Length: 214
Image 1 (cartoon, rainbow, N blue to C red):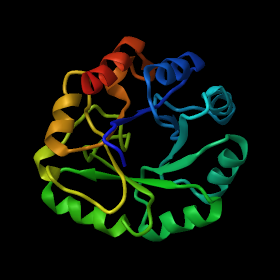
Image 2: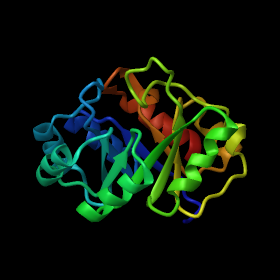
Image 3: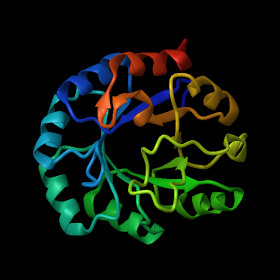
Image 4: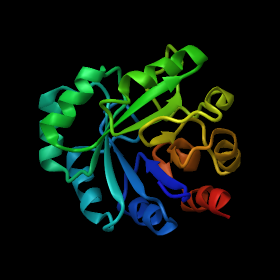
């Protein structure tokens, strides 16, 4: 991977947001298929958003413990480039999904303490990328997008054999520090660039990317 910082903006719900994100320089967009999320994109909307995404921007579908029937329906209907598994999926399930759909898989893992880092090693051999996120509170409805960060010193200087993204509580104000502290080359943000849950703010998106790229 080059020294370029790559950006994933997750939870898009409008074509305007897709255009804003692409024009700001993001490398990935995230379409959220978790119905409980305020950023949920129903399959018909997600298809429109995917088709509106400029060439060169990867379309990532976010799923939480989805069964094959759900995945079949959405992946048949929505053109996706990658699958993000953001639930309690096992390494075996990650491999199953990869083999079934032939798409690269990002596995999201929640971190709150040093002991949680061992989980990452379990997925290095089966996932294409790892998303290192803040572990949600025990009573949280959402597995991510809660605006919470974790102690970045836990992963300072850490390297893994596959590409990884940093997520969790990132904002335009702390993005540069996050890169400095963790060495992350990819950042994933959702709530940190919103004016309200599910509503992306183009100025915050631009500020987020500019904060890192200068």
